[in-house]
Length: 244
Image (tube, rainbow, N blue to C red; front, top):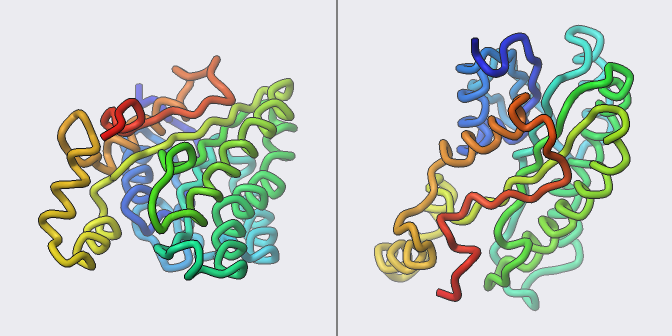
């Protein structure tokens, strides 16, 4: 039997590489997937166009979804905002905007959906973090700080809802081969050299794939992970254990 048969899943960032791959993986395992993003995603069974920083949009969309489908069994927060900028070239406004999506979006999802999930006595959240939450990276301070905040938020939330039968975990990828990552290489003077240097930071000798991330998310979202909560799980090709 498919691992998510009969489950309802909400996936944010569903128009992006990682979010779309999670939608595809969940559908293959029998879930009914609500795919959410600012632009119309096509990877789910139904689409929800909304900005994660939009209080009213999240609240109204959540009310509609709960009325139609009931409480989701799984919520994956894969939507994210970032910028590549030196700390001194960034601004408090940019930091706040990134935090408002990456952490504020998680808070909005929790506040909109978790009460109904608590009433049902089931459900779990998977938040997509990053290896950069724990490792320094040039020009990514705002993004890294937000992901560190996301992981800490997840741990507190996991404790708050454990007695109600809910789980929460983070997945922390390293360099995943997406269009966004490839575009960042293309901005360098020598894109091929930038790609090669990035791969060298991963002992397993390649970039991660969106399927690598989706497979781990699937496990955490499934009943196979029923006794796992409050954890941060790397999918990083070994990058987190090396000084390269």
